[in-house]
Length: 157
Image 1 (cartoon, rainbow, N blue to C red):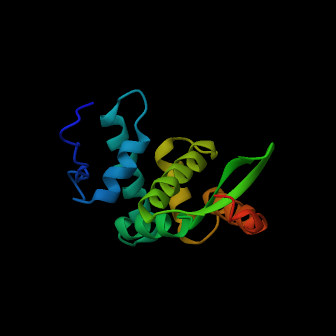
Image 2: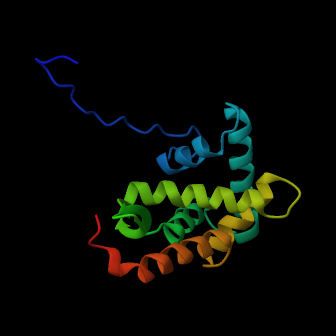
């Protein structure tokens, strides 16, 4: 490590996806990818968006935004060891980290869902999240309940 100059931290700019020109869609795309197959991720997401358009007759981008907003947590719990005991300590998280968790939970829930293909599973999960039901919403509520129950340990940072 150089003693003269310190490295400047620069935040990488998120890229836009080609069809919707939106960063949030690109974030979802990058988390759908498995084994480096980006074209498959594009196909899954865009077909899911088309199905959302047909089922709800609303702008699928607005449905995606609302679903992620509904699933985004404000608090999470982390394990902290103090004097031999492990405590679940609640933390507030930044909005960007909350979005990342929300996208991850939505994709996990849609993968576990029953259905013929990933496009339909993802579209149904996003529609359910906008209606404030589904596994991803349940996960958020579970995390918030744990944080509320362990509020007494909030000073164990």
